Length: 295
Ligand code: NAD
Ligand code: FES
Image: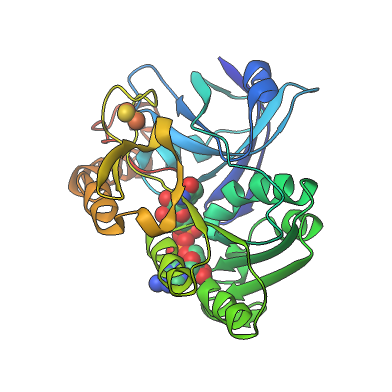
């Protein structure tokens, strides 16, 4: 069992957990993730590691409630425990002194972008960060991102905070202003990563995205996380999750992530019925959902 030392909402539906996991905390590097399971028959879900503290032996994970399991997870509180936490998984981000790097965090993807931004800053890069959210309430990790960035630009889709627009509007401005950009790292919804890739392809700017396909075992054995990179199959859990954005087949990623949508919706509806009827004990046992993308 992995004890939750602290749990707090960063935004509506987005919760940060500080979990006792000393072995993972010692080994975790930026860009990696964990797979966890809340209860014995529960599904295994990949979750972003936002930070780790090797001295305290803790990791921070950030979870957005989307389906049944992430809702259950976000109902856990300080002092509760998680059955299994496996990791760190995936290849770490490639950290080097590239020059000027633009880090883009879309919504909850900002939690995954943060440790990479921190490491790239420590490696001597000029870090320009762009954080986007649907509205003011959903902007997360603003102070953390500001602390590791030479400049932080924020956008909200509805204009309720900072500049109205998408993260790609800011990236386009930087390109049009003639800002020298040596690397772009983008983490967020698929549609955002695809839009970033299309912008930078035209300018031949090296761009890395962190993919969030369906995952089950996280060890390269089940094939659940297969993605198409430069026309070849790769497994995001062991070959990624970061890939050259200009080689990613985003259409296949969208199709594969939608494969279990009906079952996920059914499972969520049953879970909500159990919760509404006050039968929380059986909420866990509501029809087992199929695996989903990274929380
Ligand atoms: P969201 O839908 O609120 O979008 C976040 C931001 O992305 C928007 O504010 C906007 O700036 C940008 N964006 C959205 N659509 C765009 C478009 N068409 N063109 C350009 N920019 C666009 O994000 P959310 O609800 O927080 O969801 C985050 C997603 O990130 C989830 O799907 C989650 O699975 C995924 N995620 C990915 C990783 C990863 O490693 N890739 C990690 C964590 C989460
Ligand atoms: Fe099974 Fe990647 S999650 S192969």
